[in-house]
Length: 371
Image (cartoon, rainbow, N blue to C red; front, side):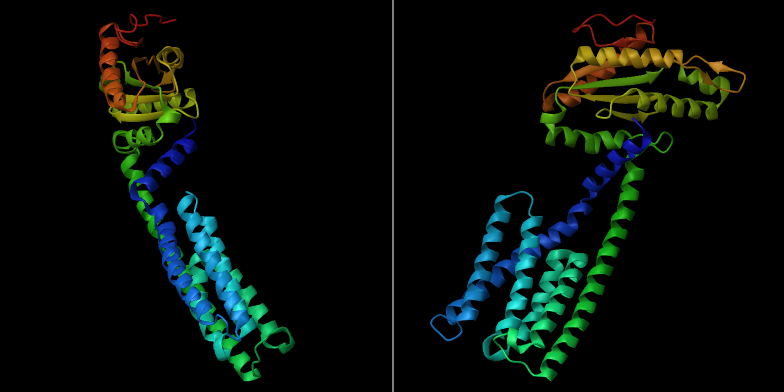
């Protein structure tokens, strides 16, 4: 797997840790429920108030608006993806605004209600679509206000022009506020992502680290068990790594770790995961993989490492080998014990001569094929 793909995994992990990716949706959802319930009650009250009066248009407008908003809230509570219902409510609010301009409201006071509607529409639709919607409403309102034949209500030129000027100023203020708030939120997300990314990434190899595995990966297995289980866990340790540091220096040791991490990344599938657990120890995760298949893949990686030369200098190459311990978990409750079992099997592989993969005596004898 390429480094960019691994960074994408870390990015997802970091945003999940902090929860910042949900802050904006939570805010919009909260405002959606508050404005919807409050707005539906108010609209229903006015629809009831104008029942059997001369304001038939208002009664129809408020009744339909109330029904649409209540229906949108009920559907949002039923379905997981609520953004479409939030946007539909924002669209309904825009239609109500135009309805107020068309009918004039009670004794031509409908224009005053457009200003709070504008705030709600911006928040429900977001700054970008909110601004697009406000421009459309501004243009259509201007057409209605300056063409009396298209409206039930009658407005004077001064009343129409002052209202449109006020609406334009309000639109600019709301857009500026929502845009700057959004950008500040994005900056905070980036800052927190960078902090979490550093905390969950090994700085030398750019692989996920132990904290990533213990804090995020185990939670992912629990929440996405159907797409991950059975899962094979492989613990990996570079053979005689201390000799590399002692004989060639820690700089050469660091380059071995980077070289080794790259081989592991290039040898696994897109669905797999490689992490550095500390020192010369690594972990490989094979989702949806039985232990026999995991052993075959692991031995292929082991042979690739053995056959790939590492150059300590331009003139001197070192033979690097690694030992592997393999275990499998079929249930969520077995994942942590599988990690421990893979660690035990790793040391069994080392005691058995190194440069081999071991699945434990309870499964089969250690794999001794070094070809």
